Length: 360
Image 1 (cartoon, one colour):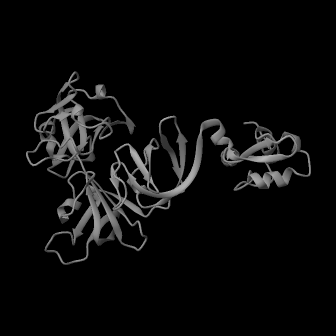
Image 2 (cartoon, rainbow, N blue to C red):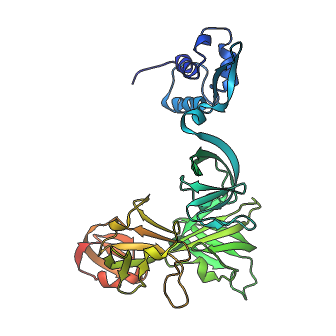
Image 3 (spheres, rainbow, N blue to C red):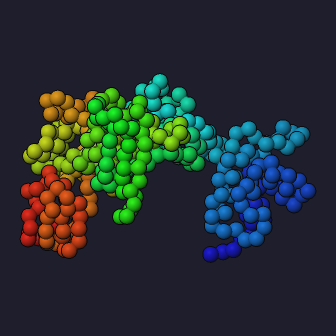
């Protein structure tokens, strides 16, 4: 709660950067301008919390004082790089999370491609960055470089939940209409997005040449439309379809998940970086999967119905629950518990009966 003036805060920043001998001199303002310490903050008054964050970033991205025995100079590297081995760059995102744009290097699920260079994706950047220019912060490790943060995204992407998609046309082989996706913006408005006829379409991470209208209306999942060339029509479509697994048994030694009506999931059969387990939006250990819980699984199936372990997969542990009584069910549409409506997943029929009480 202490109050500090912007002038005093800037003085502290100058001292940290090694310019303490000049905080009271005529050179003060020239050095501040050269280092861009006051960029995007007021030049006078008291420092606000939001301004403090900007000042700290300005300080980290500034050069520090260097002396050659005769003259004072400013280092080429930033304070952030000197302390943390991190530098800022700007580039075009060519690939992320196993998906690369046409003509760019193939990448693993834990990698990101920026201007044809591949980094580890420690920032967990998503598909919304594909085809967009953004600022990236890159940390240099001994054996690899990693993107740890992204900012200043110029994204032209829309992510639509499957339940909000109202109409899709133009994707079936015999459909001559222009491809469109119409979806709910709110309860009273429907918006239509146009899609290029030659758009790249990815279904659960796999580039799919032949798609249908039904592919863009998954029972559960999301559809992301990306207009990477900013021409008003999406040229990248990323579809994530989820199946819901009621876990019947878990073999922790062999790392296999069993479900009564779904194919088994053999974690060890996936290549490193090709399968992710998520719990509460964070990476989770296999041991957190227990019998009796529900998983949302995004994967690719082979023609025999088994999971294709050569393709990317994501397992999300669903951790939200409510206690109460089932009042009514609209099959395939919704369920009412304690007089509150929820979305109802058909594949879980056996646990949803009108009148029963329990945890859902």
